[in-house]
Image 1: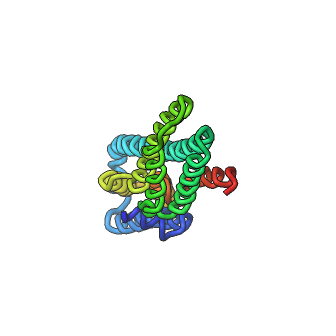
Image 2: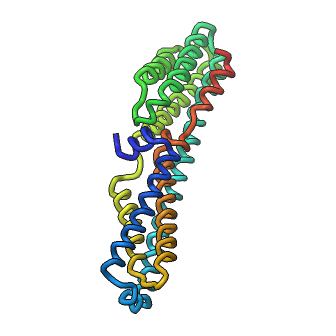
Image 3: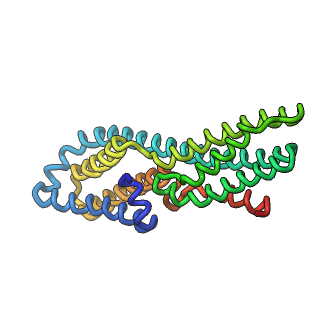
Length: 261
């Protein structure tokens, strides 16, 4: 289990957010105090005209990186949510289309669909740890076997059988995408770049000289807290099945309730 997974699983989201923001603010405050203890602000102030443009360039680069990552993780999160709804849609269509088949086959198919939907609901907590359910895999395997062995008895059954087989294939693909999304996240190298960029940005503010040290500390701490808040947002949306903003299994619960089982 990765560190981001462990943090979101074992620490309350609000507490984790406050801890990250407090750590960033603490780094800024302590760094400013220690730095100004050895180097007076007057010797730094004469370099403000040089430090200003450099900091502006640094800030733009880091802001673009943060903005890009927020957009990427949000799009990935939204895509996972859509895939979950499409997976449930495939089940609903299979359930409805099964009505054209003979009673025994229809009952077997609907039983397998219901079993799979229930197992998916049961595996949702496992997705938070990046794992899938063996029972859900077994349930969808039974569904695949049913369609694979069925011999159509009319042209109408043939048409619906072909469509149903395509939907089962889509169902398998969507399940694979869901499991992959549960086990992935932002690459460790990107996390290093994001965190290191934030630390560098915070440290750079220390090199500005000002006579009002209190105002400098407050402004630097606020900047650090804002960076930490954005990083927390990226962390939350990078893992779609864990945390306060996780994708819900409500579509599957709604489906089970509607079919009355």
